[in-house]
Image (cartoon, rainbow, N blue to C red; front, side):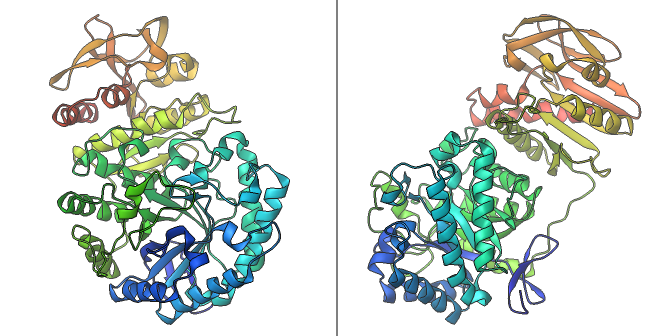
Length: 553
């Protein structure tokens, strides 16, 4: 990409020339007009905002091309608006600000809109829409390519995984759409770095936008929200450590598949300076340690006008990084402080003492006959819960991917919320026999065939109805009513030892020595019991005792 061009190094971080570049900045719409920016084009306001961005020490801006403004009629482009795109890129270059334009933005404040001429066609399956998208991507990329030295990359689209079109299209069509659009971008800008700007839904749902399927893009993006409804688990506001653990976990998951950028960090609501500061101090460093290679705030400015086609989310107009006077808002100052520290920050390191959280090899269920009844939202609920309690107990935690050989450095693995295929269970047997320590919550009784029997040292003799069970374990007493498929498997031992029984005198926690290693497992789905228990924070965090006990066996 040339000496001054931006690239991604083999370590997953951005580089310019021979040095590391950490993109720090914000997403951008002009505050006075929001989504109407390209039509109204407040040039002086935009340039002042770019000056302020650079003044505060930030180096990157991400902005959005509303398709309908650039192509108001199918195949008919507004060259004046494309000229404004060139202007914006020129202004960025004059200030040493890297730019990341986003091509497809069907969401403006929450409404799945897009061009009126779309007329309800599916973005991903309709041949007409696909062709229009490819041509628009090619034309946009050719213009952006003229400003290569200041372009961080091109983003295919913002939150496309939220479109209802993803669910009505088969995953293969979503992937092929992305492949075609990315190929068109490369046709217009061969040296471009390309990202798909999706958020947590690429992990918590099967939208067709999947980890492990970049479709030719160079890196992943992750977006962060503090709204509890955006996550598979409940937490108690901005000061709850459980809530602090979620965004770093999502980044850790994406980073296990490729480079990842924190592209849209939002804190809702925007009024509590003390709460915001506490959240940022807990989360930003954890995101860096999880492997994030860049950090962008959700909006440089408060948006002072309703979004086109959507006036239902007025609070989104308060999420800007800067106040009316152009200063960093009170409570958000740590974002700048953190960004300034990154110039000297060491690349995150993995110790030899970490606990691995297992990410199953067939995580996504749609059109995937190899999926062992894993549901992304349920698996994520369990992984997030286990991650919090393991970290609360002081452990370093990293993702272990089931589709890869287990790293010999991995000494301990937690399987929670995931059903393992026979192939995965066979790999676990080999790893445990070599000295690994496997901890498993809620092995699936319907998958408990000969391979599971070898791994777990027991076999089911009856399937009993699920229900509440009281278990004394780890110095505490636990009432747990969550079992896989609502089945309490009655088992006979074939090598395992019983470590704890429930109040029905059934085995509740068992341990099996296998070769040089061990398997310790609970019959119940511990994370689901915790996550669905709506426990007060003190009672919830008491559950860390359970994890400590499982690790100490």
